[in-house]
Amino acid sequence: MKRIKISRLIKDLKLKLVNKWHDDGRAIATSEINRVGLPLAGYSDNYGFDRVQIIGKAEWSYFSELSQELKRERARELMKKNIPCLIVTRELEVHSEIIEEAEINNIPILRTNISTSKFASKIIYYLEHELAPNTTLHGVLIEVNGIGILIFGESGVGKSETALELVKRGHRLVADDAVQIKKVDEYTLVGTAPEIIKYFLEIRGIGILDVAKLYGMGAVRDNKVIDLVVQLDTDNKSTYERLGLDEDFIDILGVNISKITIPVRPGRNLAVILEAAARNHRQKQMGYNAAEELNIRLLKQNG
Image (tube, rainbow, N blue to C red; front, side, top):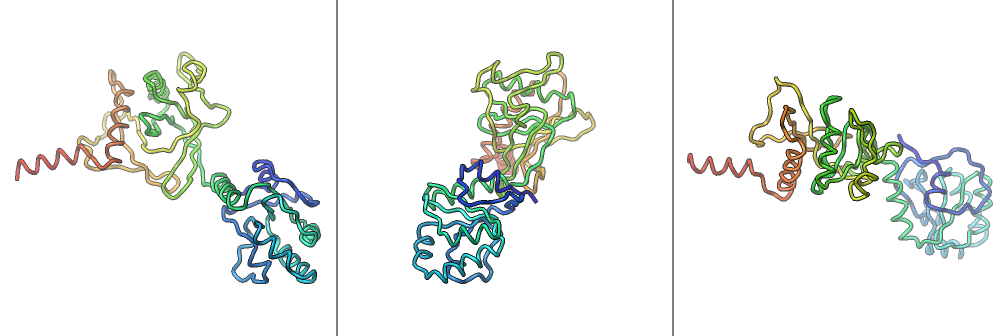
């Protein structure tokens, strides 16, 4: 299970540490968050104490009206649960009872000047992105006519050369050789390049090319949703789909992505074929399938 250290959360979201806290390596393992109204009111059954806890204006106002005895009791009970951290929004002043109990239990109290609703959206997006399941696969990811195409194939089959030809034709490179893939939701995979090789393309016989510098920043992009997987195949014995009626899929991180297998033969222009594949995939997304249309015509003619 992926985890994000509190120290990194503070840095990435530009939060201020309010109390004295010894970094004990604590981390967050869930993208869900909680506003602490219920435990501050004394109710803790089935409450998610393992999540980031947030105090907004409403919770702050309620806590301010409690007696000194209740403030101390509720703060003590909350901090005893070993919550990952407590974040106070709107730059609100943190109550001394909360700070004292947090320091006893070594719980970090953080603060932001952003409003509660906006900060909640921001941190949920951040946590979901950072905690998303991920993997790295050998291939090339390129955007063709708005479609993210992940190209697989044996070493030397021509993946990078095809990507270079597509870049020359106005399409955009995302990653070459290694593609980092994140599952951002149940049905969506996003690919990017490892930082160290971002915008680089390896062409046998030439070496490493910096696509951004050679063709401009319009020839690259940082990430792209993966819409289609293309397998480049050199096996002369393989059987390929002729009409396209039977759709194939590949499972990546539990998400089924449409897959087509393209035979590699001398003289075939793979860049043009991939452009056609991207346009055809877009048509299918919009509800039109040329293979099904031809099949309907044949059935009508024979019927």
